[in-house]
Length: 577
Image 1: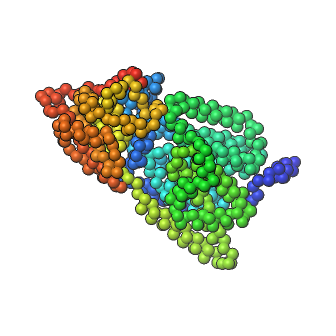
Image 2 (image 1 turned 180 degrees about the vertical axis):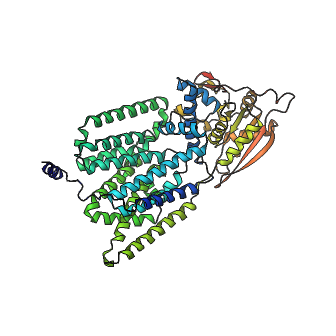
């Protein structure tokens, strides 16, 4: 009876697996060691860089995790109110612009090892290792056990290599997405086995976690639906545990995104779809041009050979079609939204690795060599080493910037004006604020952004809105004329003694920075020191001005914390511990 039911199930599955590769322990330890070496190359590549280098986003992600940690430590039950006070002291948090799962993982990591960019980067690199392990297990199970040696390439590809060393959400989100598809693939392998319901539950849980890290990784959900539709797999849904898992995931994700939309509706505009963006799906130039940079230009022909080979072998054909359709769907969906970035398509790295593994298998099985299998293996190994060497070489030429110099700047300021508010203006304000917080466990320091001060008559501070609750375009404030005299009065009213000003770029005009430069000359601000910060890919000058002249007792009576008016209410900075 069991044999007959299995046979009937096969007949009902036109997309069912026929001849799925069975994993064996062959060389697993050696392959895991090779994968670890590739991972260590990534660690070496980012050595000395603490992961805060990606301007704007990475320091804010790290600061958001610190905010949630402080929220729990202080036992606050009103997170919105606490966020306002926290923002008044460290004006760079964007705690309600992104889903909270990455912050929920990073916050306890900070609690264990301290708040630092290095700790945050290490967490992202752990995710990179998990990506490599899932790739290894998938290749061994569904391609060939000996092809697992290829899995380490996923960590050497430029996209993974670059973003595995940045405190960003994209790589962790990708790992959850890959985990989702891995467990879903296990379900497709044996869809009528009720014991595999746990893998179906895991697939839904990882899908939910992926979009609770970064919304663009939500493409894993339509991909999963497409795979289920192609294989006509409906029986796994007939399970109470599966239905309960689906209901829980939908409820949690729906609730989180409802809250995010209520608090930061402007962030959702990045996913806006227009007629032009939909029509561009036919010719998705941006992401097609991005793929070579993500996987390596010479990786593409190797992957193409593997794709062609896999389509000619019945055992591999279905999986290859699944991946091709998933890739096309990913590009189409990402092309539809106006916000575009190469890191949204990191999915290309594990897919390219998969097809390179097929090329490796094809090379090992070259029929013309007949009995000379060792020669085929030697050729395959040499080709693999050449590709790995090529990827390491181009990674070296694609070194990211480093903003560690801002940490030294923050340390200098802490020694100079411990417990005092510091005025700051520049494009790296988020970076500076995070470093200040990482050295300020007692909440003694405060950063006041000059751009948050009223710069012209009639501009009411009472109407200012947190960045993460802003509904107006960010560039709107730059269009307004800055009244230099009025701005000077506002700076004087803060009673701050110190002002940090980044030198403006020759290629990017900053009206506010130019006005501050003029104020420094006309008001007689004393230039105390100029910091030449080496960011590897560029250099940045930051000038330290003393606004108030030295007076008797000036150092004895520090400037009190400066309140910030937000949405019609004045908020004092979060109290010192």
